[in-house]
Image 1 (cartoon, rainbow, N blue to C red):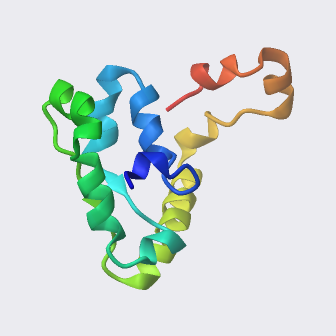
Image 2 (cartoon, rainbow, N blue to C red):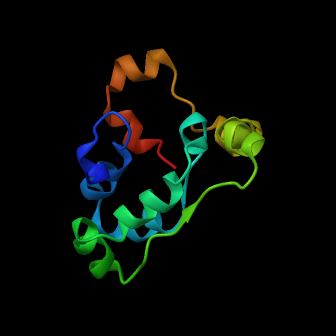
Length: 118
């Protein structure tokens, strides 16, 4: 079964379809698999095969890019890579400027996310 049909595990593939065409190249250039699911044997290969399948042909042909799936080799790195990346990002001074308070969100609604996006 194609990954894009497995809603519980692979919603990320829908993210590529719904993104601006110009952003797809960047999204597909480094897909990083982390966390407990990344420990599943063969997941990186299956995910890569799906991203290179006919289902993603519009994304791949438009951007001229073949998707790159990265999965840390060691189990500890797979489990903790997302947390480590998040902690590094949160420690950056510039990231502090992107935070959205509850008051700001209530005042501006979801539109504030676009104004403060990375």
